[in-house]
Image 1: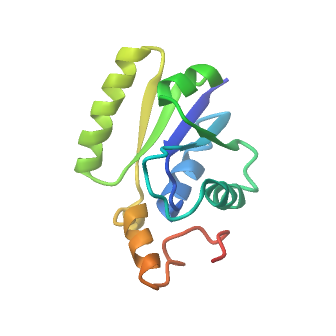
Image 2: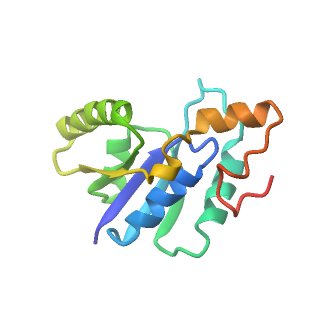
Length: 151
């Protein structure tokens, strides 16, 4: 069974995240959208709200499971018998950052491969930080988040 973990804070999930998971669904039997919990980080949306957003986004995709975790992603993969970490890349900066993390993960467990999917061009400028900033300042974020999310 091919099991992948798609880790992130998803604060909030964006159309880019949605696209990566939907496109990866043909590659994996199960994709865990794994919300990393960092108590030192100030989130816009609480954990339960982020979970509900993601569950609503993928409600028709039985391959997607939503979980949260408070450990290293490699340890989560080991616990779930997942041999893949799924990451989306918007640009070269993302690649440089994600490549370094993938190498560290590989040092910790060589059985776990990181799979990179390039973001669709129409989503390459979207990231959660920008979406949060727009939302905090009263802007309309509907164009940047999945249709299933109602704010």
